[in-house]
Image (cartoon, rainbow, N blue to C red; front, side, top):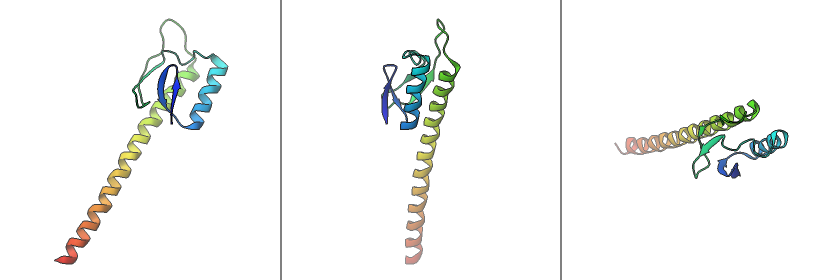
Length: 100
């Protein structure tokens, strides 16, 4: 689900969002400010820690983890589409071979 984090859209699971709230509780509500860039779809495009203020490593690593999870989910979705396409081609080949 897409949530608002640091005034940006972020696609996260419910568990990830709960942990974001825990991190904000531990390090402050501004812990994620200016830490990442994301598109309207909530996918992180860049992790860019601030240079003027230290960012807790737990927050940086977790943000990188979210970005990695988003990429893996995208690959998994693509893999599912390829498998579906393969099944459809197999059915077409089966029908065509029966007619020959």
